[in-house]
Image (tube, rainbow, N blue to C red; front, side, top):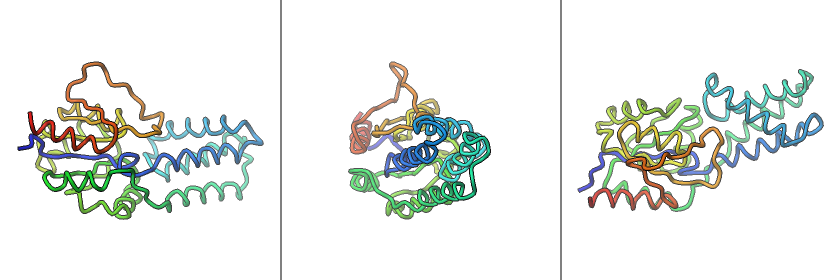
Length: 234
């Protein structure tokens, strides 16, 4: 019998593509203002604004769009015109309207685990946009609950486990961010599984200390099922 009460998954860049759209928008932003400074510098200034504004605006496309507008005003010394601002808003709308592209092996892995475990989806971001993405993904039926949070801290995981009737010590969290998905869950007392993705937002980068207990790293999401099976056999 499995020792796990709950298996939780991150959403963006764990179940479906997300960061690729931000990277494309950052490059487009740099090119748009290449008459002011080199494209890579424009993209870097935008990335700095994103990180600076997380505490005020939170995560998601709407926050990103505000950061684009703010950066455009800054790097042009306030001379950016309304037509350009309109283009930036349109870029944000395009990101909000992007279709969902599932990552490989997601559906079959969730189906396999759903047959024997309670699954939760725990994701950061804008409430409305994340709800739309979950519905559009076609994966909602696999999850007992969907939790959209402003940040992921150890107390966040403790609270969500209690809300769903699980023990945090018997909860596993899988995701592509060591900083948000893995280490806070381990600190809370649960298991953390790192599922790598080709791109990682700089803000989410963090190394795993040596000999971290209850930590697992897998090659792709199929490895989460392998970890679950291993824990159930111990």
